[in-house]
Length: 552
Image (cartoon, rainbow, N blue to C red; front, side, top):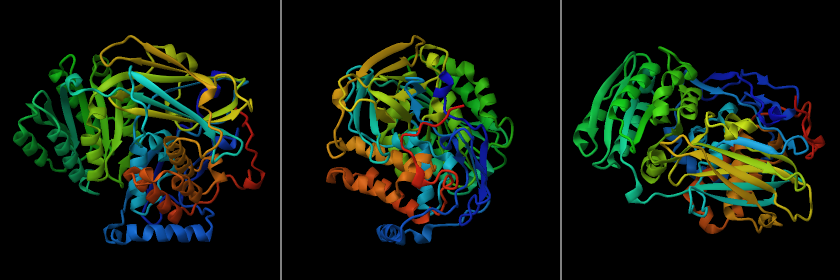
């Protein structure tokens, strides 16, 4: 029965070639015949049904936002983006299995990329939408951890799936004091191939490196590696307080040639090994559009070659730049399997968020191979569906297997998990579930465990009594589900998500992240002309919200 837990994966690459006004209209719809929830829709220019009044409201709301930016929009020719589809998690009956297991994830690149595409009046590709990265891109006001992880949880009526509740779990890591922060040995890897000359990519790379280096102190060291046709050392290990020398090396970077990512990454790890110091944050940071075309372009082959470095404790961060000519799959997999995290930067605001406001999260790893396992009480929960984490799914036994990879978590990071659950008991008196967390220390191999009960007392009777963090998280998850055309997202409209945001307190609505989310929703509502891919075989009028799909 463990296979029921695994998301329905279609190991196909989605490569779409498009111009700005005609993106991916030729893509084919893929599906697994077992259930509508297994469909992966790769088209992105099919007509959706949006009421005229809602379209008008979206246009009015976006008018002021867009009129000053219109001149900056530009057509991107030869636009190639590469994604990998992982399917959509099904609804699970607890009579079949009660256990859900997955690796933690704190990446935010999926949301950042989608946000910048919408700002440029382009519909994000459905295969590039990872719900967990949307949800985890937000900041929440979780209780701070007194131990390695604090667990926050709430259950409330679902605003988007009739007859269901939402289980919101927020896992918060400890903040580090200045005295507890470790020195950093960083190897900055610059993709300076020809594709980086377009779309302002090299300029963003330089801004990101400059901003990061400006935040380091005298205990830190920096080296710079570049790659195009071949890999080369731009700057050997240099104390971070030698700012003039480092900045001169960054400013000297110029684009040329092909993209030999494999050679660049291997050279970076060789340099990192020479700089390695026990107890320090030893990390390789790659900034690229991921469009490798020389040497190995398969992340699995590259990862095999850096396995020894990974085991030694050299961590990895991949930073994506650019909209056109972008390989999400390579960058995401390198970070996912390479003991690291995956960021996307599209402007100075993203750089500020990643390398100034969130510097400790990105550099100060507090736990590696972090996993979550939730065991539902079938007397309380009859059905459940995990929103997102399809490419982080694990077998039940993987939770206690020290050799199975998990997620790397930085100081102050939070991990948010959302389930749709069907309550089996209208008057709950027992725990909904038990949650367990497994993790290793950054320089250790011993697996540590934390166990908590999710008690029935966290149930909120109404949506109005639900916390603002939970409302915000389900709004973001609903937006991601809508963008990737999940089967269950057909039951609501973009405007319903806006109404959810309208219910937040004023101080929340004034947050920069909430304003950005609102703009993204309005923009998607304006340009999303995709049709419902399920209507012909599973019309909305006949949707059964209690339907549990057949799993094969």
